[in-house]
Image 1: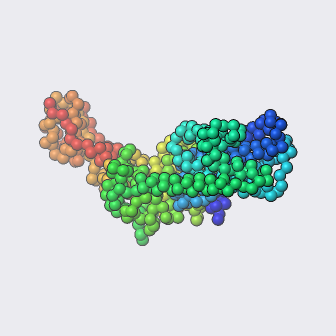
Image 2: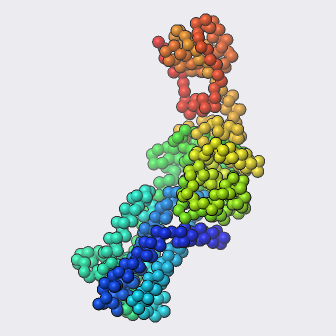
Length: 249
Length: 296
């Protein structure tokens, strides 16, 4: 338990409190986008301001997972922290649990900041149950994005990871309708966009803020992404381990 | 008592490339071992296997366990550890939390004259300071078996001195230490056992005295108009190099060779006699220098 507590203390400071990249890209930027776009679209303010709050939450989670966690883990690997933990700790369970915990905390910060902004500026009025549901959805919806972040953190070069991160984050944000409604995109683009995990999460939050039932297809879609990514990562881990194993024994 | 490290007929391949071939050695508890080899000799691969970072089904025992399973192993590795947002004191506390009987980070920092760095961020430190902090992490662990992978790279003279003082201190505390290095000179004062790795094979396993007995040579150099080949018949000549008039003879028994050289003394100039340094011995082993005299 002491090891876990130390790991949480160690990661909390560097992932959140001293991580200015997170504060800017995951908190300030989505909040600024939210204020900007909801003030422009005053006509539809009643529904749009709550739905767009959800979109910006998903966008922030995407940035945190791909650009934040992915980068952090790549750096931890290349700078020797992972090796150090493997030697001292025998396995990396504490490390991964800690990263996932702080990632969730980062996303809770996002909900608090964006939610408070939505309440104060656009008078978004949700019940406690709706906020709790959003929290639960964020917890579930971050899993495939986190897995994607962990997967791309295995890229060896920082430069490649940055390019890959940009290539994933911004197209995914646009295609899944986080910046503007997916309905304005061409049909074939919509067909790609509505299969992305960010689309499923955004759609579920949108249903929640509109007091509608959560679409079962969204839950299934997220489930498929989670199972698929876990399978890909398991196969990748097995191949990597075999590469380092003896050819002759 | 079980030996701290036991390696039996270890082989290791990366794909089709054989990196380690039939490596066998044992290390007694409390001994300091120098693992020497050129770049690409297989030192780091061997170290990674001993630490459990590379898996093998060969018989390797670390403190009576399979590699990676003992709670009392620490390593100073070659990573930079330039982690943003992490202070020196914090990384030491993180390491201390992983071991059953760690030393207090503040005590270790004081021992290494690094107390001033406790509140510095890792990515603000110079390369040399980072190496010292990495060494401090090893000391904090208070582990009984310690691996030091090219530990003094990037350290200045004072830091190196402090480093070797602390290695001696750990040795006196009864810790088993395995140090990898390119340089035999660096570890000769401290190492009880020397392992020389060449092309994935152990070329030498023994003490420094045994190494010197086995490989000590005397270098006799002079200038002459004679052909180099005529000196081959001298007693105990191991190798001859000739460059124009300059001849360098490596002898396994300098006195005997010099006695045989007396008849030629009138024909030679600038006679110089030196015993081979440890560096020469290392080169002899790792590069397999042979008689390369050019007959003219």
